[in-house]
Image 1 (cartoon, one colour):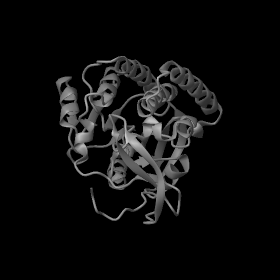
Image 2 (cartoon, one colour):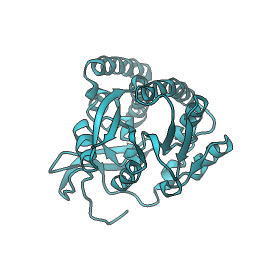
Image 3 (cartoon, one colour):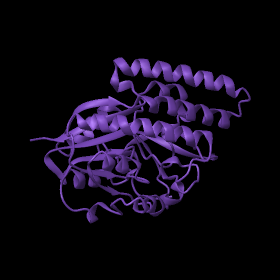
Length: 297
């Protein structure tokens, strides 16, 4: 384990209290501690394990998969296909076409979708296994942001920010690559969601130890202000709620060794329905939030 002194990503305070112990969803015998900043309430993983790369190598980690092996994998592919269209329509509200960079692009599904829609695309993906899939599909994918040149109308991070230890440094680098009217599109799980509050340590989007940070809207506002960025709109990805509820149900059943899995599925359906209904009227309670961010003039 790393011995560095922890600092809150939002306010730099070094004071914290234990918040929640959560299992590794791919190995429920492992557990990790989430702590809460005593000054601002931000929640983050501490300590951060060394050699984080190995935690992305599990065959069940869907964002880096080449093939769908299980029902959950196939459901993930279906949800992703639906979300690709949703993401493209959302971006078109701000730019109908142009230059797009997807940071943390995984196997390149979103890049391929936008390329087919007429965009000029590039990606950044540190995982060699995932990056190789994108390269094989004739996509321009680099290992690091420093290898990318030029400016972009749209830079996206789809469920990536919560993984990045040096998040401030990365956002600084990306914001400098925006065109004057460019936007950052950043999706993160929402710790204030109904499903997070119900499932608690079994909420799949805590995803320890891969997810280092757990944002609320007020955390995102303060984080962006540090970089002279402002949130211009917020949106939900509705099917993320249903998928998160289903996977949370699976993890809860595995950890608690519940025999009545069918009851858990019914429970997850009601939770997803309630969270979706609540999110339709109060976007800050959505399971997954998309922030459209611009530079302050």
